[in-house]
Length: 524
Image (cartoon, rainbow, N blue to C red; front, side, top):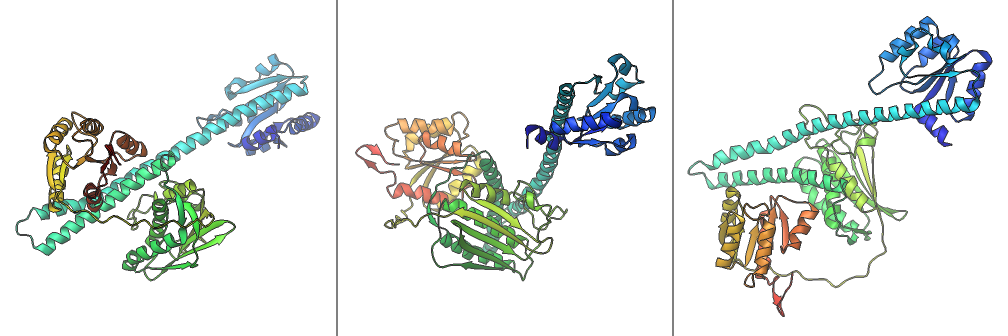
């Protein structure tokens, strides 16, 4: 297809209204130039074919009747704001054309005079078609923006709903915990409730950030040879317990041989978790989710199939887009923000793979498929034994300006046997560190008076504190935030809200000699 053909196809047809041989010649010339054209039988045929997909009108001036003029005026007045349909009028001479009653009212009118050269006709129509194409592009852009705005509004409403849900039990739990003489079992139950709901909120925030990072290309994979079969097997086994609580079975069909891919185990587990969560969420109790893995044409192919709600065929092409959801009812019993599948697609694409979805329709179940490129079986490496957990009892400096967060974390660390000192701003953190000589500093980044980065720089420049273990605990969680923290001297970067055991494990590394000094050089 030539460029002219492509333009004509995208912008619709040129409607020609001319009598006898004039019309036939115009049709022949414009078709030869690559334009999609229609020679109208009469003015009613032209009026019937008017629409957004029309590129231009080519009309002989002698056929512009009062009726046609009136109908065109009404039709053009009703055009949307983006539209300005080009009209080419062929007249005996320009002065005669301009005398046509109210011709200027039609708007975007160009007058071509007879005798008309072939090149002049072709170039005039081509210019009109190009202008119309730009109008249609504006139309599509406006439509996309309106759709994005609608999705954004729906998403913000869903986000508010999803965040308010866990906030409600947390608020109730806070009031319960203020009661005196609370029985131990009720205290434990309330604490577990808070931890569950905070974990739910953290998942929502992590998904939001991950989708944004994937979209902007800010996620860096820690890729290595990986037995994908083993990862699928372990993920299914772990998720089966959750699915059982919902009355849904999960079964895996996986060959016993390894299936080697190059991937980031954490991110690929995230892919599988999202697919399993989606399948179980939309499966009624008593049904089964099937996970299968095989090799096909140099690809590892994993399928997650459910017998649940299914998908509307019109939704399938958009199901991996952010904020797209099948369930838009008010109660939305399955919740969620429509981010999980978008994250799946983004992470799989980072691994050089592809995703797809199939469904026969509503209530007919769904199958989600992931393809990942296979690699050769890697050479075996000697097993590295994990270091044992070190003892507690470390001197810890906690730098955190949120007093509630600082005080609660101080209690948690003291319960684990650590000696904790708190500083609520940057300058105090540096002064206190020089006074107490901590073995570990847990430091927020957004501190008043001096940022956490500046605190880390100051401590690394102090000969007495060069070997202290620095852990950034912050709400800034992008890849560049982690890189900035490590570049200024932090040993680890953890994103709030940190799972307590993860923080305790990082602190324990100081006791295991992870920050030992060899030959005067700090090993990180």
